[in-house]
Image 1: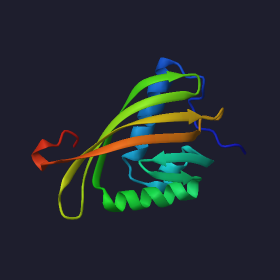
Image 2: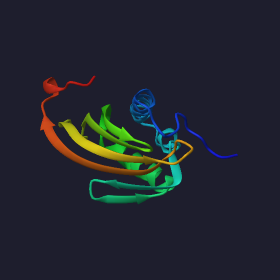
Image 3: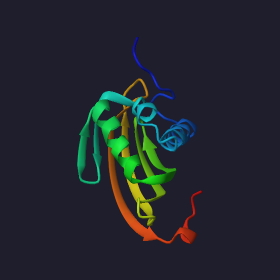
Length: 138
């Protein structure tokens, strides 16, 4: 049986916003297995300077990420879309093992297959050290 993840492209304003909210909700679970199911088995990522290919590498990457980025909380916002592609801005907050908090800002470009699975994800991200009382995402 072919994997599917509605809504499917081409996206409308409503279905694009729904897809972004689904991604935010999934990433906030911090569950690499669950998150990886939204991507094609041969998904292609660029995350900062790291190149990731396939679901197994996605799961390994997310496991490492959430072992380092503690109490991770993410907010995504649809920036634009056309057919099977989206641009998303995001910010997330987390702290390291020493207790230093960070706010990470970035943009992602997404491309989906006909079954609604993400086949490409390109992320550019910057980190800003913040004080705990400066946190906006709880």
